Each structure stands twice: as C-alpha cells, then as structure tokens.
Length: 487
Image (cartoon, rainbow, N blue to C red; front, side, top):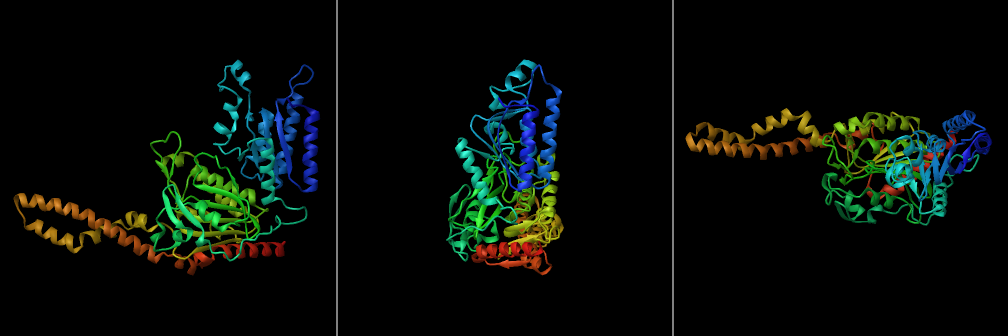
C-alpha cells in the first residue's frame, strides 16, 4: 500500500533534486498508506517524512513545479505532501484526482475505531466530488488514469517551458490575428441572451453595459478557435464568479481570467447574512482566492490576461467572515510579485477595490486597457448617487416642479382633499426620487468615464471591441519581447 519509510523518502528527495537540476516539473503518481507502521521502525519514519516535506517546501518556494495525479487512496503523510506541492498560494503545479481516489489524514477504519467522525467510505472523507473538488484543493477530475495523464499533457501544452527558455513556446494557429470577436456567437446562456458577442459590447443592445452576459463566450471568442482550453478549479464551490482558463491567444500560451457577468444561483445552504445569489462582476472570498492562486501559478511562466467586468469585492457579513479581506489582499500580493506580462482589459465595468488590486502602480508590467463605452471609477454611478450624493438627490427631488406644485396644493387643501393630496405627493416623491437618482448616476458616470481614467493614467489605452483580439495578441507579444530583452 505504499508505506513510507527511509528508502521511499530518500528516493522522493532524490527525484526532487533531479527535477531541480534538470529544471523540469516533477510528476507524482500518488498511492500511499502513509508512514510505515511496524515492529521494527517507528518515529524515524516520521522524521524522514518531515525531510521530504522540507524538500518540497524548498522546491516549490524556488518556483519549481510538482504535478500530482492521485490514482488511489492517499493517507496521512501523502495528502500533506500533495498539499505542500500543489494547494498553497505560491504553488504552480496541478492536482488531478481519478475516480475512487481520496486524500485522507486518517482512514475510515481508523477513524471509526478511535471514535472520530468518518463517512461511509474514504471517498466521503477526502474524495473529489464531495470534498476536494468543492474546496478547490483538487484542480481537475479525471475519468480514469489515462484521462488524468491526458489532462496533465494538456496542462503542459499551456505551461511547459524548455530548460533554458523563458516562456512556453508559441504554438501554430490558423486563427487570424485580426479576427473580430464581435462576430462570435453568444446565444442564450442562463440569464443572458445575445445573438453575438458584439451585441454585448454594443451600447444600442447593451446600454450602460448593464445586461448580463456569459463571460465564457467572450473568453472563447478571444482565444484561438483551433486551440484547446483547460479550466482550473471548475468544481470549486462558492468561487463560481471567477473563471480561470489555460488557453492560447495568437498562439501564445496564457492564463486567461474572466469574471462572470450574470447572476449565478448558490448551491447548498445560504446564510441569512450573505447574498442570495452570486452577483455579476463581483469577487467573493473563494473567487478572490481562485484568482490569486491563478496569478501566482502563472508567474515567471506565462502571461496573464484578465477580461474584467469588476464592480468590486462583496462586503456582506458572510464574505467578511469568510476571509474576504485576506483573499482580496492575496490578489494584490500576487500582482505585485507577478513576473511576466500581464494584460488587464476592462470589457464592462471597473470599480472599487478591484481597481486597487489590479492597478499598474502595483506592477509596471501590468498593462491596463479598456474597450470603448466601458466604465472605470472609484464607485459606480448608481451607488454613488444613492450614498455619496444622497443629499443632492434629495434636494433635486424636493425642488422638482411637479413636487413643488403638489406641495403648494397640499398647503392650500383641507379635510379629505388634503389626505388624498398627501397620498399623491408620497407616490410622486418615489417616482421623482428614482428619476433624480438615475440623473445623478448618469452625471457621475459621465464625469468619471473611462476617458477620464485614460487622462489621469489609470488606463493606458481605449480600444474598439472589434480590436479586442489583435490588441491582446500585440500586448502579449510586446510584453514577452520586453521581458526577454530585460532578462
């Protein structure tokens, strides 16, 4: 069952040493029952497991990659090794789980015997479907061992760097560099309905960029149509608003990040102090964590491209309780530490804390651009009108001619007529207040436009939607050339 003692640990350490010497990823096909338990050896086995753990920490902190394929039951030491190799914020490798595999600290039988809490089997304690997929510790699920190897090869297709080279090699593509993404189909997906991606970006069909759309359709339109895409953490629960793909754009392997732009239903129990749905363009704690891990994993390997519709971080009590501040800060740290080209393209809205953690002030290699008719500001116009300029909205409401006329009638009225007029005034106030809210919001958005962001240097370039793909390819290529010339 793959018990671990000195001989096994020496071989693992030697494998890590060889991978570091060759500057290649280490592949780990994990089946292990943990530390060897026998009458002849004891705590020295644990010391050897610690020696492997230290070597893994040194290996991954040096920016090297371990890829784990869990193809059986992993107990005790092995799951900790898997975690140290692939699950932490700084790690680059992937963890793939096959059917029937599990990662448990203590097996079901031992848990039952000791009086601990177990499940019906080991998969219920640490399998993909109920535990490791939803919590994001396993990045991919495979149909079988062969499919797991295929997923690993697809990962290398996007990320493998030949020893002595800086980036993964550019792939051949027949997809035209200047292809207009606006012609790509969108269709009806969830809460969104557009015939084409171009309608998403057209102010006539999507005024104010307020209609929901499917971010994956936009991402697929930008990527090479003859290239493969591989989505990390697809099964990660509560992280659905962040989408992470490994893909090719103009033949260049990239980590492509998108933010879901339609409301998504929540799965399972929904706390009363949290949002009823995952709202569009919003980063929640787990989606923040996913984005930070994605950026870290691509650092010093391949470019990162972000297609951003970001209104900010969710600030509900539930999110604050669930480490929103910590994981939001992790995005900022990931951007500061990122090595390589990073392109941040605003495709809809760009507000609040999201502006801070994706600012060019964090990393000079970050190029911030925006499509025409997008919005970029400290806060969106609607919340600004409702909160920051509430006094102005109230003043405009009370000074509206309709309100003033009714108020004068009310002042002259008596008896039953006065009661009716008071009711009319109350209803009119709601209508006028709504109008003035919209009026102030539009004024704010008009002043704090993406063009103002361009003038003050927060955004580097504004492009038409038809140029989205050629612009991304050019920005990626410029970033790679700059990195190679500086290196």
